[in-house]
Length: 387
Ligand code: IZC
Ligand code: ZN
Image (cartoon, rainbow, N blue to C red; front, side, top):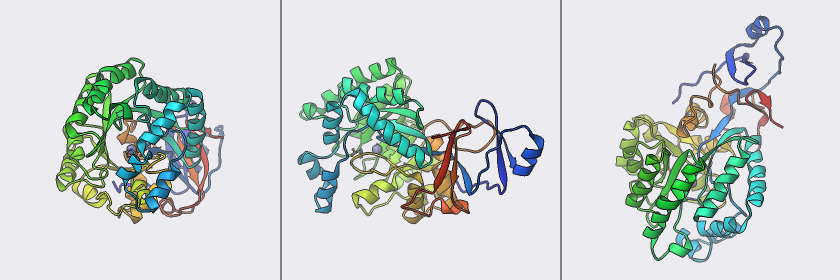
């Protein structure tokens, strides 16, 4: 995780398809390709950042939740008072696909301006067949107008109001109606579940995810976020692509992820910070024991309105005690692995998409360092400058 290659006075040769052909000394590239169109870069050039966990399709911000939290009101009480995930569900249900598209387009543009060129985006604020599909269609319609979007179906994000008396009937709906419709329209690459005491049990989560796998989706789990219920172990046993959050993971869960052949631990330090919680995901023991760790924003209106991956990298270092090298890998290479695109993005290396970020800094270590200002100067996707 600390294996970072730094090239000084480097250059990137990009082919006509927007793929990286060579990374080498800039003067050598200039000499060998005298006819190439040249763009001068100063500062530090990074691979485009990859945000591997967002709930990016939503309506208004949940500012009332924040004010309630400041008064010491707990998550469950906030939900009972009409806030929480279900308030975002009411908002998304009330919005047209067109309005949601416009909101999401402008939010994704902001992420791009912060250097994020690939974003995983979940549904999960619809919680009905029609409204889950509406969210996923928004993701598909945006495609790669801004950052490249990777869609995840999160129908099992919460039990909606109309099924509160019979959560099992809601799981039936997710499995029997939503999943097949999502797969039929090819609207998602991943299926995710919020596996957490009071939301979905490991057993319910396993049922949804096993059905999703049968239909060809890859798997993710919101695991051990608040109190924890063995979500990390479940993710590993299902060979999921990622186990996300992990602030309440057990030692057993850490051991399972350390031995996992493909499950990336996606940590979301902005969430703990924004919620004012003091427990932290054990990044150090995960890394030291051999797990692959990524950092993401969890961008959503309730628990993490954070958009900046450099900020998450800074929190990785300051809050989770990651090395600066590990934080850079966590928002590029490992983040790409967490969403199944590690063969295309996350590295400045031959064969990879020329998704690149120019930061106005003198040393790469300043990326997980400055916060509160955007140090990104220019962004390219597949070799083309982004407006
Ligand atoms: O809207 O609160 N944890 N899902 C699971 C969230 C947080 C998003 C939200
Ligand atoms: Zn989440």
